[in-house]
Amino acid sequence: MALAYDGAIQNLIDAFSRLPGIGPKGAQRIAFYLLGASDDEAQALADAISEVKAKVRFCEVCGNVCETSPCPVCMDPRRDRTVICVVEEPRDVMSIERTREFRGLYHVLGGAINPMANVGPADLRIPQLLERLKDGTVTEIILALDPNIEGEATSTYLGRLLGPLGVKVTRLASGLPVGSDLEYADEITLGRALAGRREV
Amino acid sequence: MALAYDGAIQNLIDAFSRLPGIGPKGAQRIAFYLLGASDDEAQALADAISEVKAKVRFCEVCGNVCETSPCPVCMDPRRDRTVICVVEEPRDVMSIERTREFRGLYHVLGGAINPMANVGPADLRIPQLLERLKDGTVTEIILALDPNIEGEATSTYLGRLLGPLGVKVTRLASGLPVGSDLEYADEITLGRALAGRREV
Image (tube, rainbow over all chains, first blue to last red; front, side):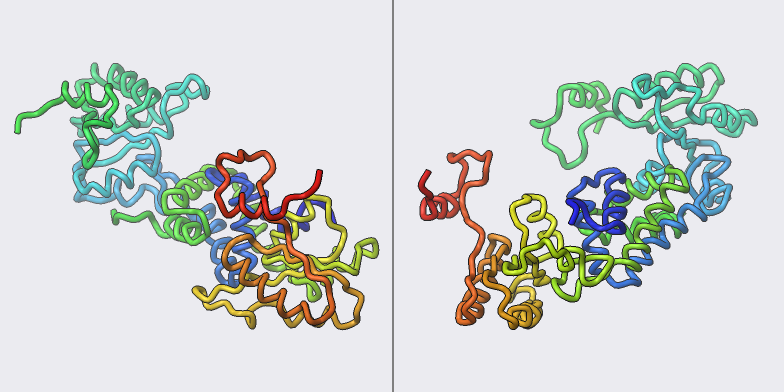
């Protein structure tokens, strides 16, 4: 017996190992779980993978993932068409939807400017965003990028690009996360919370 | 827009969430990774899942997973047929094979006695083990069960069951793991290491 599993099991372990957040031990655990699972459950997972690749598209307007293009948000007549919230990834759309605080439209950039990973402005969906501003409907752009170096750089870049077009450009507030301890806040976050203080 | 993803994406997230060691956030991360991956990579994962369920069987002799039954270990004429190493799960066979210290046969119980999970001796492959002892070829049974409460209970049970049959029953040594610090060893492990001390 070789020191690896038989063909099909090793193939499955290898395939799971390539997914983000799953190491070789985790992949082995999942493979043996699937071996013990019912045929229906295993087939449901295989089908879900095939189906998502077959059905899911990117919305031609906002760049979010969807099964119809334009997506339901872009097509919804009840959404406020004067505000566009710019996010990095499709999953960020869902995070903002869950707040129930935003009723405008979205624009997914597909990443953030990151010179270390060779991602520049030309790799993002910035021309498509400019295109959406042309008819003058949009009056505010909310930049909801990740509060890290790449997100900040992209916000700064977009702020300079969009400012001269006469559209209001805002960004998410920095500050203390709700439910956290002041004692454990890092000094940059606390400094921003102080600078952005509001009257009660 | 509902506060969940469109059908196919949510199905995929749900399917991955059911796997061991993957939470909802990890499942979402994997789903979006697969959305961005090439069709070939995603299809390879789906195919690997279907294939493992179609091809992989349990060896009728030892209970290990294999693509042919009896498995390559049970069929190998170079293996020592007088020793059987009893393990809980198929993955334990691979762990022992990797040591390159064992050239006998295996027997996979399919678990350990665990009253909390309603697993009793009748749920394990114990009759099949007794069957293998009948022709008198086997002279030693090595119990290589997990060194936890369930594994110890199963070892004790098997020791009492197999002892009267005139076969030598041994178990893996308890002691300090190689590369560890004596200082950090728990008292039970250290006690066992002391009790099992060997002449140098």
